Image (tube, rainbow, N blue to C red; front, side):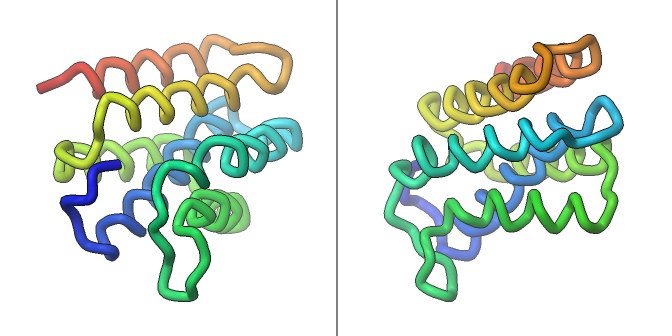
Length: 137
């Protein structure tokens, strides 16, 4: 991620990405354990290396992805609400979304969708919307 933003925007970035990943997992009406496991694995394998930003507690800000995902699960948010939340943030802060970051987001979203019995129709539609969003000017 490009470092032309404040820490508050950076933390919000990770929170909104967590919201998107929740939208992907929840799009078929439920979140499966394998989707949660895949998310946690990818946060550790890919997202922790993205930058060295920390949250207000001195923890790697990438963990905000998991924290928000878990909160959304407990608070029964819908996939549509979470996708809209991410989309709004993306449109307001396009400059912090490099091609590398967009690629990592899409790769992670696809892996979550594929983690439980392959991608279904609703997951494919959501991934298509994400692709279109990233291609928009």
